Image (cartoon, rainbow, N blue to C red; front, side, top):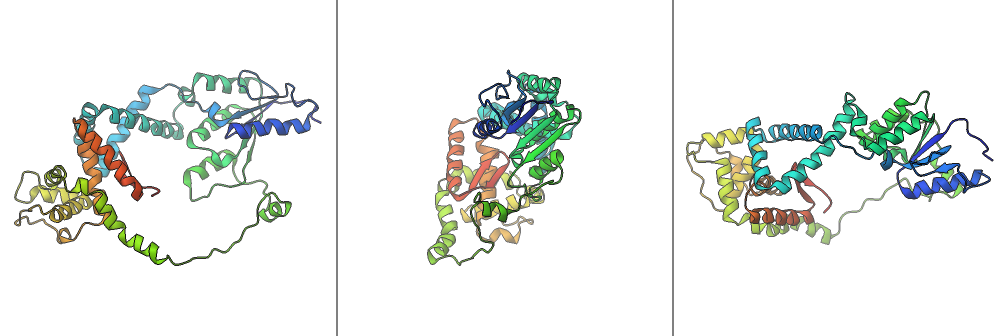
Length: 370
């Protein structure tokens, strides 16, 4: 039986369910499992304190710094991804803020969360300023009461923000004993998770072989070999028809005069001597070729004396071309438009792309689960 503790300990778990399991398991080693030995509440300190990771990493207020950092990152991303000047990037965001304030605010808030993680990972910013006052008080209390042992259950779940805050807590403890528990080590190929894990816990100290766990009955048997099969004819037909199905679904947008007019302005502008097209081709080759293919596909006339017209423009648009075209149309036109009907068109386009495994965000069209 456990009778006394020379030094208090704290356990962090990923969910409230696992937190409760820890409390119940501690009761197996005590004479009075309902006594004051364990606490799950931050306001009641006990020899063994069991919390969730979310409790210690509740975000605090540092809004102005985060907004400024997020806006700077957004501008830099636009300049790098689209090859535009800082002035053009600022004008785009200013237009979006005026014409579509809801979308602008949501995107800036989302980027502020990423900016917080980036600032904390740099290590040159005080972590405490980003914590909620309750989280700061909890950390101060653990340190003041002499906590030495920190147990991180399911430690492969350590997200960037959690890992940084825990490093901050452990760094404030003199001579800490840190124990990490997990059944699934993060893969070295997953840079963030693996870095979070090793920076806190280092190399594995003790490992239970999988066959031994299977023999004990705690893990189901498994097979090492995998069997590969060829797709059925029905699956082959589906794969072959994806392009046609996609074009049919987006025809509402691709047949519209609005998209055709915008696409013509985007690559040709008002100039007829090829200078505008040559500049766009050099700055955004993938988008430019995709747009020229679309204009030809839509039957729009392209001046025949343009010297910079590439031969690739004569080919039919591919799935990648449609994605590149619609991405810029959505973000550069629909999202920044002052018209509510354009904002509704943007929402409709997002819904249309989603079944094909394409997600439209401020960072562009990304592959997702279809």
